[in-house]
Image 1 (cartoon, one colour):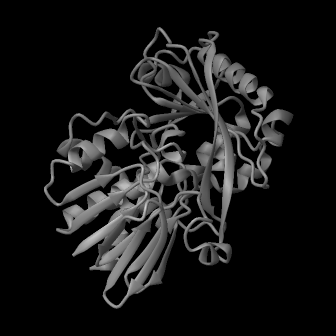
Image 2 (cartoon, rainbow, N blue to C red):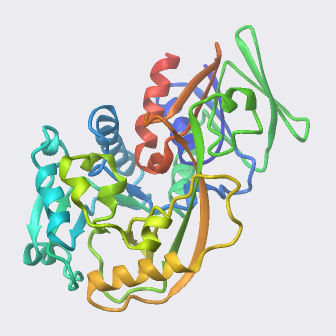
Length: 371
């Protein structure tokens, strides 16, 4: 079967990989010269620890295995099984962690509560103000600025893979057992099946479908710092992340102290990852009401930088880059929005901030529907 994959982000690229592994011919089309959207504006996290119990956690664990598999077949793709430490700054946050360990699926996440000294044995740079940590060895990271290039370079070795960038598809039609994609330039692509991975673009193709879908756009702000001299051996989260991730939905969550006003106003959590070049990626904020602002708000950046510095016990390097991003999210908590637009057309979007983490498993599930 010849499959057209529209969208060169992490969702589209993992779908192209899954289609090749299933034995199909793949034509992979991206409108930008290189992807510019959420796939390169994220932490590069492969996050298992805070996933919602049930299907989401199952998909996250499967995706973690697939990321390991992708790395093994393509060693040049930077992948680190570095784990994560979520830090408790007070007894209320520690109580949420303790109660989370009583959940029936805690063993699947491999959670473990560590005291401060045990935490520092895993990550010696964490010398600041906190009581304990929740360790999740399953969490991992990839490099968002190189992962797509690495994936496509490996796919390009396959004789059945064709990559086309700077091609904007403006129309898609299904007729019988054939599907046609028409580019703005007039070029026509034909295949047996089409997988549309539009990211947060809910308007360019099949707008009428997405207008009634349970999806929304989410706006966020992130940053990176100058290189940090030490080696931050794990990903790091603060206690506010337990308010955000549904894996910590336990009764004691209601007894957490009120968030700092800046954090509450911007729906914030601290997530932090050191990149391969020594810089630190930090975030993030969340906004849900469109139209989104075009100006970046400075207070959240300074707040997160200060919070992170307190946890490390040293003022972290200065912020060198700030950016915003928009991703597509299901509003009902579903893993993604996968809809059959026609017999031979499927769209896949709406994973929320979980796109990088879950993409390989989402793609695998899509290909099972096509078989």
